[in-house]
Image (cartoon, rainbow, N blue to C red; front, side):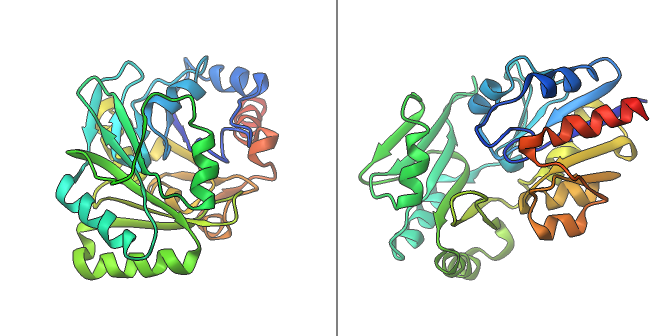
Amino acid sequence: MKNIYITDLDHTFLRSDLSLSDYTKKIWNSYENEAILGIATARTYKKTAQFLEGISVSAPMILLDGALIATMDKKIIDAKFISKDVADNIIDEGSRLGIYPFVLSLVDDALNEAFSYSTTLNSYQSEIIKRYVDDDHTHAFTNLQAMENNFKLVYMAEEMLLQALEENLRLIYGDELKYILAPEAYMGCYFLTILHKDADKSHGIRSVSEAVGFDLEKLTVFGDNLNDIGMFELANTSIAVANAQEELKEKADIVLPYSNDEDAVAKYLEGLQNA
């Protein structure tokens, strides 16, 4: 049975400028025939497909922190949604603290997505929005509301403010939702991601395993941040890049001496070939 390699994107596989080197493309694609290759990311289908142009992906992709499992040709394998009523209430709770989320939603079965946000932005969000200025799936609202099928809501702010919001939401919803509070590696803030309770990368890997029929004992995963913990605990071999969060490194079987900007994943895979 083939080995399986699944990597996170941002700060793990992608360089900090969101590019992939020719070297990484060459090494990754050299495994195309001998292994199952997959992606597990917080990003949407559209952005992931853009970043992975020229990259072999043979397994369904784990997208939006596990809220969506879909193939590169837009076949939806699984999806976990937050309802409009719950999402609108989450927005209201945040507004009481003066913050508003990014809301990522499914528009239709053709896998068209919406990235909705409030015109009231903090400095961290304003910086992020600059990266999406040319994207046609972003929508700004003076009165932000959720859609019918919402993959996740993402807040960006100072840690203490997001901790307060998480505590408020836990009082209302308890374990009915999943909350991921983690540092943003390069912007000096934190983000709070709110998802369906079964939307995470570990559930995503199980869905992909069922769809493809692979053995988890053959699975190696790569990551850098706290939303990778679930798949680290599930995989036979978990690998953190040098720039990973310390908490994730503590859970890793291997910590690489290379960062994402040094082609860490590709260097590990090339080392296996040369062993």
